Every structure is written in structure tokens, then in C-alpha cells.
Image 1 (cartoon, rainbow, N blue to C red):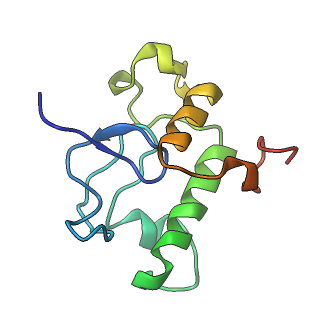
Image 2: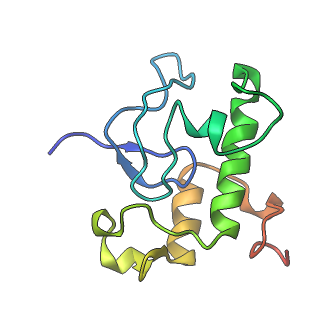
Image 3: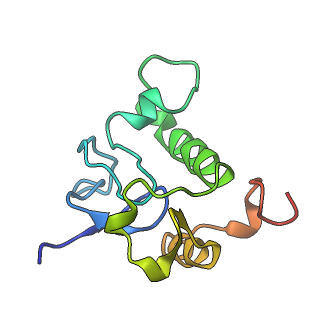
Length: 121
């Protein structure tokens, strides 16, 4: 079985290519997360709006955060439910407790999220 990499958006370990290069910097692999549907090299430019045609490198983190927020607020629908183990989802959507575990694997401070469903939002 090939090594799988963790998605920077949702924390699901299902990417074929590492979204970070050897220096730990974001790279456009055009790999698509089977969980959140983020396409590295496309989604940061076309699925979020930061006021640029092509998102500048210094705003990649903001694009990732915005995509994550949109995906969560839209119900955490999995892109390819057949690729996500059934015990991790409710129908076509990721279970909230699974999301929390995946986000914790990214060392994200979910207490600081301003996202519907988190901390009273």
C-alpha cells in the first residue's frame, strides 16, 4: 500500500502526494483530498475568494483556512464517500467527532475557530 499524506484542510490521511515540499512549504500537487475535495494547486485559487485571480504564496494559509471554514459550514460533505471508511461518516458527510480528531492531528486550535458549529458559532 502506498504511503498516504495528511490533508492540510481536513486532516484526512488520504493524499497520494505530500502537499508540503521537503522544506515544509506548500506545493501545488493537484492531488485532490477524497474527504474535503480540496485540490492542491486549484482550490486555493478558484474555490475561495481573496480578491486575487491567483492566490499569492503569502496568502495560501488564509485560503486554506477559508476553504476549511466553508467546507465545515456546508456540512462536511465528503468528496468520495466510497473512499472514506463508513465508520468515519454519516452518509456522505464526515462525523463531527472524526473531524475534531483529524483537525487535532493538524495541531489546530479549534477553540479559536469562528466557524458555525464550533464554540457557540
